[in-house]
Length: 620
Image (cartoon, rainbow, N blue to C red; front, side):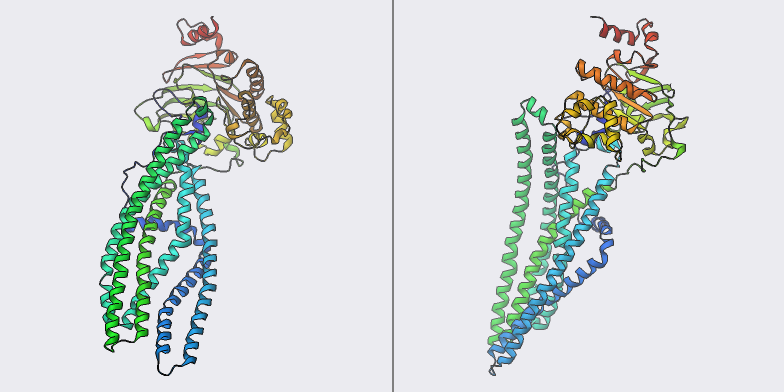
């Protein structure tokens, strides 16, 4: 597991760029995180998501109207069934009246079935379109967030937010909201009809409601606490799966299958324990509801039977009253379940809003760079200072000042952790300096649109990241609109076309997760071809040949030399043989510049760091 640590060892630029796929330090909520209360503020936060429904509001309104009609029509059933019983028990034995009521019931069922179909269809359509917009918004915002955000997040955790949390909202928009409204209508309308049917029995029935409502609120708080805890634990478990699969080569190379199994087992066991606790409280509440609500119904039937015997109540009215009471009891019990789901939705909403509330980078279309923002290749570092956001007390760079002329080749050398890759990260504006500034064309980097700067730079890292698609897609990432001829020309310049042709599917060969089906040298040449296609004004090479064998290094070095022609190049290298021809060599140590000059000049510095490093590499 790769960590960004700022203990004087700057992580390499490739790690900085691909933090989103390899970030390490988890900040998922601790197991004991208390659930936030379902306050007016939390509901207000949730309703922020309804702006995504706004484009579909007419269709959503029709669905709500159909829901209102079907919910009200439910309240007609108990009364009609009571009338049916009374007509059947009447001395006149009016078959016509019985048939009339029976036809009304059949017609009501047909109307409910038809309207219910359209209501569900409408809600599903609105929900799917709304959640597609929400997913797009969250994803679009996520990839626009600065690197400092990804330093403290895991890929699995963020993936869970887009998948699990939004899926939970899907259930809420599709069924929970409709169920909540339906049950409220039934409870309010049912109570009104109970009072109209028998005030005496209604008082007896409603005596139990305050107790049920208070317990529903208390149980809902507990359920939300454990539900939110379970969501965080599921996100952590997803993270383990994603990291393990991404690093499957390391897992197998270190024979750590059982270690990963135990790690995943531990986390999923925590999820199960939390789920069991939630289920225990839900079960206790369900048991109380059965005893309380249906016990009250039994008491009402007993009292109604007494009133019938005394001639104060018609049998049909008792049937209607019992059915209304059953409807209300079921709705109150259902409200508890709906409330628990709403609690989980509030938790999911808070997680999503935490992402959406993070300040994003201001990006623009990289294809639209205005003439005044075109880079000449001239760069100046002016008293640059930097410390990583997670370790502000530790200075990674201190008072860095040097100039790079247009089309110069400048090398950054020094021991590991000297700050070389951090300079590259600041050059790409992945982070902002803590002090000093970087200038392009004599203008402060902050005055350039972020996308305009990055679109004119390209990096060939040591640890090349390839997407899991085809070779064509990976090369074209440097210029998505490139033609096949342009891609082939770039591959040839990168000395990659030879091995690409040997594959049966050529450019359409699938490289596998992170390019696992290609060798290190082949991956490097794909990355170089990608940079060639981008045709950057400023080229950054971060240890591009350090992990290669001699034969691959020769091919890659030849491709790099072609790529560096006619553009400003910044080369980070441990192998000093690769930077002998550099126009300027900057020697860094412990975040400071200790020497600078050409290869020959630096070799004349007695006791110099460059001379010492050179002697270690070339003297055997």
